[in-house]
Structure formats: C-alpha cells, structure tokens
Length: 392
Image (cartoon, rainbow, N blue to C red; front, side, top):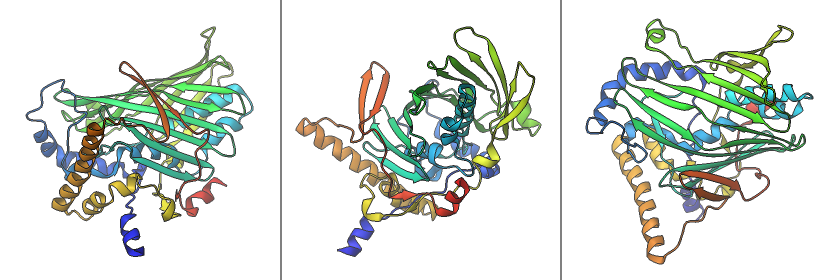
C-alpha cells in the first residue's frame, strides 16, 4: 500500500524558464519554425486557437497553471512583493508595485507551449513568506484563478486570467484578459492593473514577445502608472538587438500631472526619473530578480492535493523530459480522456462544476474570481532553502 501511495503521488516539477535560458529559446526558434508552421496549414486566419492541441514535442513539461504561479513565487534576490508595503511614502510604494509588476514578465519559449490545464487542476507553492495557490476554474473557455498572500507584510494578490489566441497567418495574437489586484492591507491601499498582450511571430523573424499597455492605479493615493511595452521589430532582430523596451510614466490621477518618467528594458533594467528634481534611479534589475531560478521541492508529500498540477501531468512531463514521444502522447491522451469522462459523468447526473478555492462570477464574456479563504496556507511544495537565504 505504501508503494502504491508513493506511485500515486509521483510529481515531476520542471525548472522555471529564467532569464539566462533566453538564448536556448532563440536557437529553438530558428530550428523549429517549419515544423510549427506545418501545424497551422489547415487553420483559417482569425481562428480561435483556445482548444488547439499540440503534439508533445511542442509542449513544455509544465502546465500553464504552473507558469502563472511561477510569475509570483519564482524569483531570486529581493522580495519585491514585500517591498511594496515596506516603503513609507505612497509614491515609493507605487514605484515598488511597478517594479514587481514588471518582474512578472518572463521570457517566452518560442515554439513551445505549456499544457492546457484540466478543470479543477491546482498548483500550491510557498517561497519564504509568500504562499501562492492557483486553480483552473473553467475549461471551456479556459480560466485560471490565482491567490497569493504575504504573511509578514499582510499583502493580498488575486488574479483572474483568461486569454484568446487568434491565428493571424504570420503570427498568433494572444489577448490576455482578466483583472489583477494587489491589496496592501496594512496601508489600506488597492492597486488594480491590467495585462499585456502576447504576440508569437513566425515571419519574417520568429520570436515571442509581450506588447501593449499596462495601467496600474491606486484610488486611495490618487496615483497611477502607465507602461507601454514596445514590440520587437524585424529590423531590431536583424541587427541582433533584443528590444523588449518599456516606456511609461507615473502621474497624479486627479490632476494628470506627470511625476516620473519610466524607461528601460524589462529583461535588463528599468529606471524612474523624477521630473521635479531630474534625478534618476534604477527601480528594477531583471538579472537580480529572474535569473538562477529553481523549481519547488516537495516538503510534505502527504499534503499534496490530488489535483496538484505537477502530479496531474507527471507522467507526460517525465516522458517529455526523456524524449519518449510516443509514451508522452499516450500519457497526454490519458489525462485528456480522464477529463472528458468526468464531464460525461457530471452531465449524466446533472451536476455542475464548483471550484474548490474560488468563487467565480461570469458576466457575459467577463470573469471575476474571488478567493474563498482570506489567506493562502503554507504549501507542501516549497522553494529550497538555498533560494530562501537570498531573501534574508
């Protein structure tokens, strides 16, 4: 029985994609472009790719749900979330929120996609004082909810994220929807922010990049930030330049007065210039925040939920890592078939799916996800002590 239990709770957790892995992505882009384009030969322009199925050779060994969680718990060096509340002045807190928001932008592996999460799948990880819980609350359309809390600084982060990928011939345009909210409960401040778009380009130069506008607003302090993510251009890539630049500003909401200019590159450094004094400062350094990342480790196997993402997809991930493509395809099919059977049983009994950790409200095409518990408990998956030492 003990051996059966151990097998049942076998987990495979892939390493997060860090800043230094970017060159590998560019190499994969140049090698895999023909194979990727062949998958879309029968797909019409403008088609919704939400339910498009990839072969295991083009899957990362992780679920999209894990990718969402990594944007919060996977970091090295400074605890950027905690800094948002530790700053004394409102303007300094907003600059910290801007820096943390930029840190959630991670390099994209071109030509490789994570698994589409199954309904009810979860991912629960702790790193230092930060506890993160994600859950797939809808499958058609795919909607993911995230709740993170910082024990020491009394910070609450909630995300409701869903996207619509559209095939545009030379590229895929992914509109990321949903609301991101950070509450600094000790300061009685709420910061609402939207999300950038993702563009996966095939021609003339392959690559994936974030683009669009991000707005961060705090009604209690009458301050807001607006960031513009500049797309990589073909000319820049041809010259060997990786653009990924950000330009933006911090303003007073009521008067519209601009207080700071923001500029830099999200994969390098971001600076803020005080327009009154002319002084500038670096508010974010990507190399210090999103390099040398490690996956979580299992602290308590017995507490790992049956729905844990790393367990749901463990066999698929293991076969992908071993490049056993035939067995990976079979394992992936088994996960998807299990989900279809669960749906059939619910439909036969007239049972509706109810998320375990979030209250979900749908208003037309918009979704809102609220956590059922005020704080996220400590997780059975943790970032190793080697990383936590960097926080102290």
